[in-house]
Length: 482
Image 1: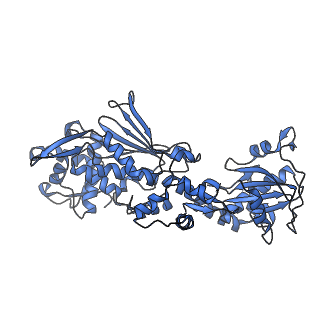
Image 2: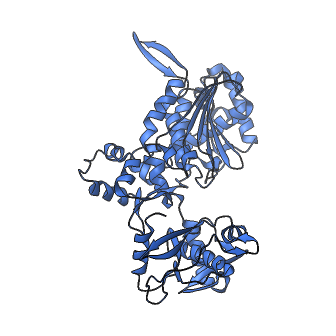
Image 3: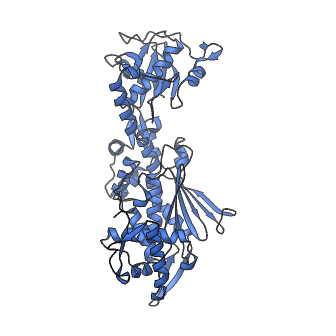
């Protein structure tokens, strides 16, 4: 953290130590430091602070700068440097950094400790917490333990900082704030202070303890001019890869979007559209372009991948892969809802703040209707049903190009039948032999084949008769959960 002198002055101005601040003079017992790192990191999370601080060279009572002869690089635990020894004994989510600074002509050491994320920070496999100005074992305070875990479970990746210690101009230079006002169709303030006000209100930028500014992960993901400027989230950039044929043997193009999701969304969709096979149709002497996949389905599927990805999974981001017969969209994480209820389920966002802001910017609706649109748009073009595949840490959605009914796999036919029943039920109707024939673009002579498909779907417990006593000719079906 830069501008340490300003930070120290602000912390000295506090009336006393807090649960996220510890002043020391020359006490540098390694075990005490390890316990304090755990306690301060956990207390910072409990108090909704991004950082906690341990400072050597400040009097605990008067907050006077008295200096310290402590040098973390010269202190050893056995034959090992102190910092290396600490990192071996701290839990993997412990993030801290020693900083040296001279103020009032005296040496001061600042240990900047990031708040606990996802789970508690431990030292020697033990969790600690601050109780007033004292470090205690967390399990001795069950009320604080419960409160801390509630905070950790509700902690949001979006609120963590992608870049910090920036002055106002530097923070604004890294993000495309103009897009925010353009998309909202609101006038852009003429001053930096006015722009900063809106950016802080939206949690795109935050003001830090040292008076400088930080850009949140959400702010960088959505509004970065270049995602590569933010090392923590650079791998979250979406890649678009095109292959020659139906496999990954020959790659034709590989493009990684450098812009934030909001800034570059329309450009991204246009890029994918340009790579999708198209054909020209003539209707009433007018030429119309028809794409292999519904553009609405592409837009909704890509938006879902961006919004609902698991951002806590490091080193990976959404990928769009185009083949000659299909389009695959892969994102980190698995859905929060049962995929068998993906049509009728109420909306549930993993990244609520991102979803909320993108809804207000009209990039998504946050109404849970994305999959309705994807499914219906594919049905209207009589394409195979969009498929969802779940893996340990990823979700893949596949859109298929036009395929003859006889060439569609049995598995996909059953899935299409089920999705059709779900859509009809949500619309207040039921699946019938006729509606399913229309969905696949089949004529009445195919009634027998469709009847067998319906029977197989019933046996697979995907659908059920609305009234089992109805004559077969007039039978209607609904999803098995209805």
